[in-house]
Image (cartoon, rainbow, N blue to C red; front, side, top):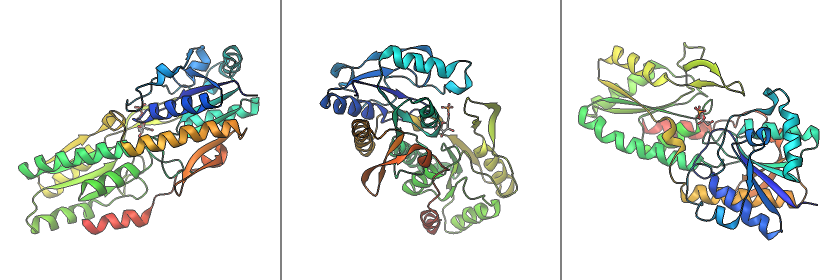
Length: 343
Ligand code: F6P
């Protein structure tokens, strides 16, 4: 018998999480469920931090970026007694089920906790859009909009200065942001982690453009992309987070140095960084988040726990979390090859 649902938002944030929180609250109220907002992802259940949500607390958040609950990269399985504390606080707050909004790390913890009979449903949220079981993750469309708009802006200054502009985007080991943002922004070259790139080919595109009188180029590179001869991704530091992830960054600078060395053309780098995670959600993202938030509560109501609520071919579906997180969403190479016809 469900009386109270705990909702948490974990991992890297994005712009439409609050749309999902609002949907979870409104749908829960229809079933007579209370909703408890757990603070700062899994940390809230380790430290015992949270508060009852109300109609007022979710009013006016549909269009607010970020997460009203806060987030963290806390992993209870990496904390001495962390799982015990989670179980204690679930009991203390009287939570009958959890809804966890995040990427593979956040929802992977929920999956692991099912062995302790902790019931919950996951919602896919990450700008990386790398969760295999869903067509869209919350946050992806808003991040694509930011990448596209940034490329539009960089076009004017690249053209004015006759420069090669390298735009480094997020996505960790996935190239979806680079591909969609680059395609929409009319990038001249798009580089993704799923395919090692060749400097010769990049230089060839730049020179061909110059022959046509286009003395500037825009190159979009995913932070996890690598050139043919480089084995390891370029990182900011050797530190890893609680889920073993390094902080990627710097491939843009490496490409700029190599391009300048090979062509002599002035090159500049823009790392979009956390701009891709901020600001207001797009309309599409709000719809994705609303559908997934409502869908997650429906799965709780149907007792379909340990599932991820997904959108597949425009339908809201349920996929067992273990299956939903098995590997990274494979790149759409047809679309990647299509993007090359515009080089
Ligand atoms: O997973 C989302 C993401 O934005 C990645 O694209 C990026 O590499 C990472 O998070 C950055 O993490 P943080 O915000 O902890 O620096």
